[in-house]
Amino acid sequence: MTQAIGKLFGTPSQATAAADRLRATGYRHVFVFLGDPSGADEGEAAIDPGVVKAMMDAHVYKPHAQIYAAHIAKGASLVLVYAYWGTAQKAITLLKSFGPLPDAIPKPPTPSRFIYNERTPFSSTFELPLLTEKVMHPAETISGIPSLTRRPRLVTSRLFPILSGSASPLSGLLKLPVLTRSKTPLSSLFRLPLLKRR
Image (cartoon, rainbow, N blue to C red; front, side, top):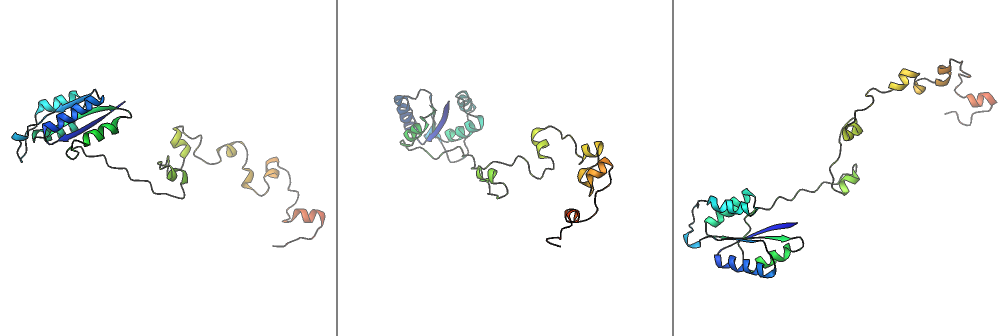
């Protein structure tokens, strides 16, 4: 796995010296695109399509190649190196030692951090988006499997009466008379005074 590193220089001699140092250090994939500082003016310079194509052949994204080509048209020179994993910082330090121009490619914006929410501690701690929020059937939404029913008490209403729907569900289910309608059945059965009336 490699990382592309591109630096612009004000003069061709700087770019050539930086590229030679990279090659001497062991970097094999080094590309140099030289501009002509003497022919550069302060106005808008025409971008050379051949330079853009050459950069794209070196695996530079077209939007980045167009940005680099605009700077080359104004007299800057580009050194592009592909560094293997673990050697990128060394290549950047080496290129910076030759006094490059400011980076031409804008850095991607840093994503904003999630705000900690006490109601979602796990997602907030690890800065993960919520899988579902304000959804009536979260398991259905996450798994993609439809719920067995969206109506409550489907099984109980079809097969037998709801156990908790009445004050005496067992007696009602078995069609037996209620043993007692007293509000204090245990005390009434054993004829014991109530410990507490409220």
